[in-house]
Length: 282
Ligand code: ATR
Image (cartoon, rainbow, N blue to C red):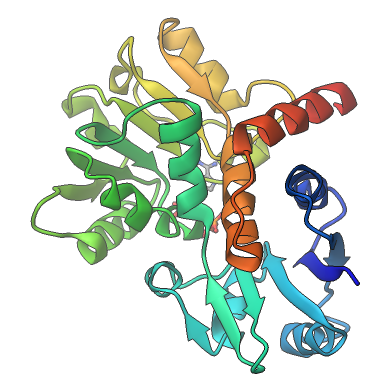
């Protein structure tokens, strides 16, 4: 009999996770089902819905907005990376009844930038825009790659400063500030947009001086066409490389799949198929 998995969230209808996991399963010959399940917490508390799915025999779940913090609270044990992110996107239902929480977002981002885009993170000067949950979830994975430095820029400077302080370690300088302070700094090698501005069709007002011709400009959002942030970068620095977050989505899914099935799918192959699907379906 197949093992059952799902992604839960609100809304969930447009999630690409079922497509991605079905492609992984096909590719690796794993006998699983994977669907998208809407949890409306006005009708049923998140924890009750999760326990019900566990009782129905599900082996694990992906958790997306707005439940990553609820999932963190619900899990009885956490991986170190979930503990540091204070958020959970992957639940593992162990046979002894315990629920483990993991966070595979940072691993997905690194997999995409380092392995799929072929851009080395080690030794690079990184600029991260945003200081919310999305950024908090990936900082540890980026630091583990040993960049030269990390600057966090946020609309609300205090959040960036606080986050930088939390992740400060001796070997890698990490600092925070607002957007305007960026004009006093040299250009960056890797620029990652982790704000939710793209969702509103907006671009954070950062100075184009952060770009250089060999920068990789990365938007954690993805879309059938280049996001506003990617368009902004290409207008100001036509030679830079731009990339959206679809590879991060496939990468974090692959890491969840690995946690559940102990098999690593071929991420590049599945990313190619998902990109084709997204481009053709608009
Ligand atoms: P998430 O979990 O998606 O990170 P969040 O914790 O609400 O959500 O954080 C959203 C991030 O996007 C924040 O860094 C926010 O900036 P503030 O801390 O100043 O609120 C940023 N953000 C949202 N809309 C933005 C916009 N239009 N321009 C710039 N930054 C924006």
